[in-house]
Length: 190
Image 1 (cartoon, rainbow, N blue to C red):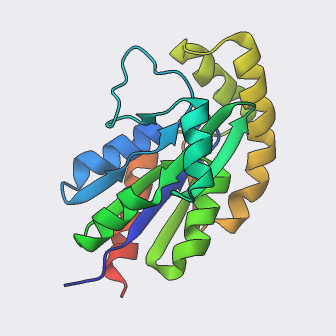
Image 2 (cartoon, rainbow, N blue to C red):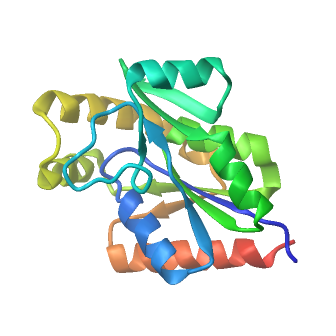
């Protein structure tokens, strides 16, 4: 049996990361999705344990103190995101390829931890203006939240060269093709 591998997909908000991760999961029934934990409020369409593990800020801080996260970050004041080590360990023990939908810093931290066993992909929108429009179109964020996300996105773009590959998402069909080809090449390597 081949050793289990990790596929890390990271991007600033509005780059299309989640759409591409969902596509990847639809194409490969043998992949396992790494459900992240967050302290942000649950959106109406989200389910605990499927979309995220929704924790209070206090619960999140307690788990940090107990060293239960592979990686975590306070993305915005009081808004934590992280990957529970136990969830990753369980999937790896079962020999599953794990797909991560994580922020840029978290993605690099996972890559650093697993090295060549992980493929780190940075999803890039054609411009900050396109990203802002995508955020507005999803209609889930306040003006302040959009402003914060855009400021952070400009900072996150600087990290793209540290990833194994950058997938441009200016045309969704082409981006889907590119991510699938890159993942398939990675899985064929030892």
